[in-house]
Image 1 (cartoon, chains in turn brown, orange):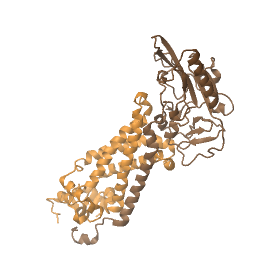
Image 2 (cartoon, rainbow over the protein chains, first blue to last red):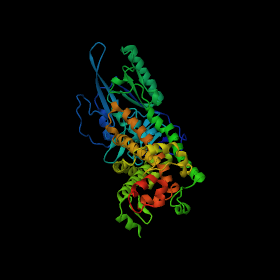
Image 3 (tube, rainbow over the protein chains, first blue to last red):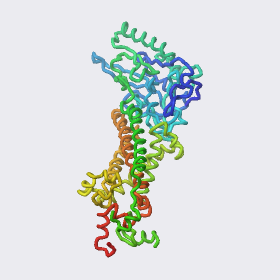
Image 4 (cartoon, each protein chain N blue to C red):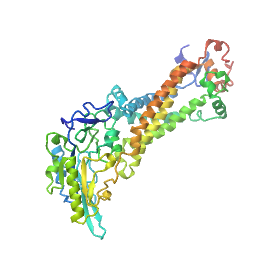
Length: 296
Length: 226
């Protein structure tokens, strides 16, 4: 997507290490989303569309304030609205900005077979390169957050780029810039973690949210997008944020051991028939047998 | 006499001057339709399988083109396989003779065919390959549809997405194993087999040597029997 002048750490579907791996040492970038101060205004949704050049499409009403049920190939940023019943029986509205999490261990990149279709920059941004994408949809199976989406017209996959084009020029992502309450922050991963932990402590100590905490799931090596949640023990309540996201076991098996078992088996098969030919040779119905009327 | 004349004028089993029609035109066409579509799916599938084989996609027009055609050619392969099932399913049933043959299969592998009991139109190994491909293609079809429309599998049933990639890979590898042996035996090992699936004919001697029961069955009652 971008033409960013960023160092590349990993490349999907690539034989051998990424060129220039570890040459450049950027700091990790991170987006912090404080769900406790989000008012659901959707300014970030509009800013995302505007910066990335998509027009506002039809909304899909699904008995909530949500613009549509899921993110789409041309709608990368979606606030998920969830009614939640508190312990005292009262109702609260949980609002969470949903988008690509920019995992340190990205399932999409692990699953992708196309050389260079998904790159992870040294600053942590995971970005799709549509010119290399073959549209197979393996990233859909690899992603623990259900983020990559297929454009049926161009047959390419799309998702949030963390505004890699802006970030590489020293700007903050468009969604951050548009947020009126300051619930969105952008900076280095260390700074955002500090800020998030401070806010969580504030919520625990001063606002009675005893379970408030920071969502930065270790199962995918941490993420480039972290949340402050009122109740970090129940992320599922925020529109299905997975409690312990991981690259699915079968995807890991498929891209790990199965690859080597399968390749060895195929090589073994070719080697086996070659050796058989050298040892036993062909079955011939030769002239001698022919004279015998086919009697062996 | 020209080969084409024999093919155009003879039905299965008719014998003329030591030549026998082993595969009808329809059988040959469906075999090669299956072979072509399978090879396409194999080449493109291997490209998607490993980064070290992604270059194979360039042979068939690049990654996006390969990705576009792989499922369609896969469907064509499925159809040809189902047609082969329709044509051959009776010939492919395992018989008592097959079971006796399978117990001494090592003589077949070691080219000591004279120690083997006589076999019918297809030997037990051919039947195993047929059923491997038949059940393989069913698994490939079901899992392949899952991969094709992966976004249509709801998030709550996402285990189906993971199962689809796994089943597709395991089934494909199993068919590749059979395919390697099939191609080796059909071209290098059993001489005469490759021409029989192209032009349809084998020699009487070939038929007697490799498929004696079939030979006896189709020549029964004809004056040509020696």
